[in-house]
Length: 634
Image (cartoon, rainbow, N blue to C red; front, side, top):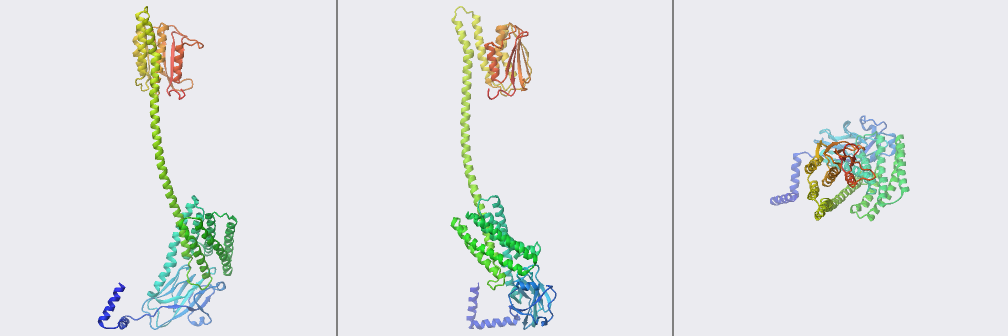
């Protein structure tokens, strides 16, 4: 747009046939007729200084007589310790000569007035700063019409703190519109930017410190994060107007924090570079501790000369550690392939130069630029440390996620392998169960009705065997086959149902032998473990007991009872009693019959017991079975 407007101006001038310079003069004249010209802003480089011992605000002297013996000083005016011993404030007087009264608001712009300042115009106070102004510029607006034609006296009262190095920089008096941009620019860079840098530094340093204290995986970064936090705390002194602590305690706190930054960075660099130098680290800590203790004593005595001396010595020791730290920072890129660490030497050199600049500026050395630079370079370093810690945290998260994905993949693969293994095991178990059941059936067929059929065949081959005897042998074989088949039927843990099926199968045979059942069966708890194999064991016991009655007892009635009772160990269980009214048979323990041995073995396989008692009328057989089922060892 500027180029197009210039082209249009040139075209208009060429069309009018008037030189451009003449056109500019005409436009300036028209502007002068429209509005009176304001005098330009004045930068005050010299002023009369009148010291005040007590430091009361009061009012400036009404005339120049009081300043007759006051020295004329060149600004900036840095207060040495000797002056801070005898004075607490000072008046700086200058005058502004105006050809005409000001028609627009003017302002007094104080770039640097440490610790605070107030402004008087022609004996009347027009404004003052609030709180502390360590690094804050000050702008005092003069009301429109307050500046008259001729001489106008401007008095600036500088209020100091004895333990701080105080200074009044050259200030500017001029139209507000002319001086405000400079004030706002300086305020932005010295206050707003510093506040943002401090906030970001504290956030990054605090989060990095919290992370590194819990996970010290990266050597040196915990100390570096601590240095960032300390840096942010120290820089608060530049922007805080109302400290949360008493003035002397606050000064000690922020100064000690600033000195501790270098000590923490040195120790952190040792950790990162794996340099075992415990004696040097103890010396670094002792230098800081000695400086902090000496500074506390000097502040307690409120002696500016002692405070300045301690600060100077302490700063010298800290600068020496800074030189060593810069050397360590140059070693870091050589031992690490991380690209972001290559900036460490640059930050170290910049920090050392800026630190030396600010120390010289604080002690009154005229050096450009005349602003405190530490917040910018130091905050950049602290932000870099915090960013590096968070970057390491993000890298660790990425590594963790990659490991988790790999672990999930491996777990999925292993899960599939395990599932396939379980499928194979289930198939093997099924095949083994089928094989066991097949072998059991074959064994039962061979030992049971198969053997009976073989015996019957032998009887048939004998010519003189009665037909009834052969038929009875065939019935026994058929009953045994039915017994095996019944054991394969679904039982659903019902012992009573098993007894009922056994009764239905054997009752007619007993009737042919003149024996009847006296059925006194009651409900018993279910036996969840009662499967085909176990059912066959139970039926074999019943079969053996009834066969003994038919063959040896000469009984007419078989009584069957059921019930529930625990055994001698307190295990819950059920029992089945089979009792006849024939001749009692009581086998001796030393010579049990083959049938009793088989019954005892089958009961043992079921974790139960068998009892045979023939002392009374007939024979009593009691089978006791546990509710919990056979033990795994059975």
